Amino acid sequence: MDAQPQVWHDLALARAALDRGEMTRAARHLAGALPHAPTLPEIHELLSRLAARADGALDLFPLDPHAPAGRVAAHAHLLAAAGRPEDGLPLLAAASGHTPAVDWAGVPWVSDPVLGGRIDPDLLARTVMRLCTAVGDPAPRAASAPLRPYLTVVRHTVDAHGEHAMLLGAGSALARRLGEARLAVDWAARGARSRPSKLGEIWLGYAYRSAGRIPEALAALRRAVAYDPDDLSVYADLAATLADLGRLDEALRWTDRALERDPAYDCVVHTAHRLRYRADGDVAHLIALADFVRDHPDDTHEHTDLDECCRDMPWLGGTPAGLSQLPAGRAPVAAEPSADALARLLRVASAGWPHPPAAYDRALGLVLVEPWELLALLGDPVVTGARPAGAAEVWACLGLLHHGTEEPWPDSTRRRLLLGLLDGGVDRVTQAALFALVTYAWVDPGARADVAAVVAGRFAETAGGPHARAVAELALTAPGLDRATRELAAATIRVPAVPRQRRRSHLLRWLRR
Image 1 (cartoon, one colour):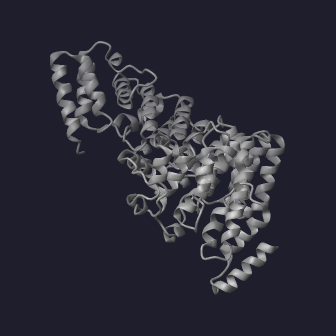
Image 2 (tube, helix red, strand yellow; image 1 turned 90 degrees about the horizontal axis):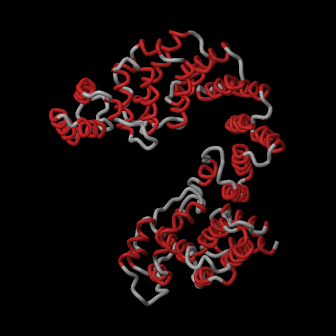
Image 3 (cartoon, one colour; image 1 turned 120 degrees about the horizontal axis):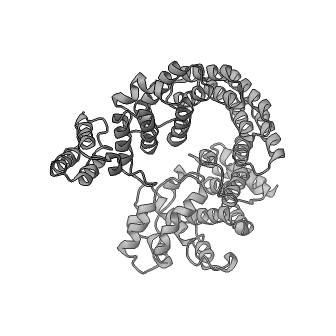
């Protein structure tokens, strides 16, 4: 393999230190080289020389809680060289969990069948489960090849120890993450037959689902519920699987059953709100989910339901395409903003965000930019000409939300400044200010009624006009908007291209209703 120049430099320093008898220095350079070329023979040769010359070579690579991955891997290789590969594998797997795309396990001792006979199946099952948790589901594409040696270890261990249900299930979970659906089904089915259990059925259900065998996946997950009706995470998995089949009503019945048992069980709450939003498109479900996330920071694990629902949706997940078509350029402030203020704004000014509360959090850094500078930036030629169009204006307005946060919202300076930006026709600044108000309503329930009234009023002013759709898209993301305005906004987006006067008459009829 072609190693980076830094690797060869580290190896030269390690070799020189070893020749001088400076074992600690040599170990430091070897640990630094390993992450960049973990299978390079020269590194392993020097590790062997170090082990031969130093008493207590393992102590040169201490395993403190924050040990870097290179040091952990070096410790694992020394254990394997000392005839203890079964002790080294969990350490190597920890390095793989830290950086899955690095080929930590691509060394001969990992794939040697001897290891399968030495390692305890329970220990290997726990090791593989920790690795699965670390690499995600599915594993990153770049990690597929580097993680495959662990499947080889599982295969050798099963051959040596027989049908071990826990190991087969954990191996199935890893195979599934690496795109090996057929192997995942085979191992999970063997594990479930060897020792029927709730966990075995869950692994089998996931394996069937990854293989596209949905009816069998549902059957396995239902058997898992029968084993343990109180494990509500399985209810969430069943609901998600049914939803993928388009059986939303049945899916929601499973989430309702689970919520009757525990209304605050995080996996079910996330799944339920996501599926309800999918069923009717009402943003209130996503706002309720955002409230739950804010009020329950200690969820059992990270969830992505809110991100998935908001992705690629106008304003929920980023600036809409129509924003670039709105007029740009204002002068709210005569003073010149500083170069530092402009740089800070452009650093955060992306066109996308996971969801409105995440956009609010990301704008926190703009608290270092004075409000008058944020206002001045709205008219700066660099900002108005930045690409993607309109993104910088959005972040300038979001930045205003982080100033004077100790002031109660109704009489706050940040509210007054944003309302002032709504004057005049519909342009990028108007939209950016409206979105900042809507975003604040997402994160502060106490501001929702006020913001809803502002958005409804602004929408009423534009109904039937050339920019009605632009305001309607934003109105549909606002918490607490009254039903009539929400229906009119939805109808505005659905209205086909007709002459302006007919469109205006149609929308005004909706508004009167």
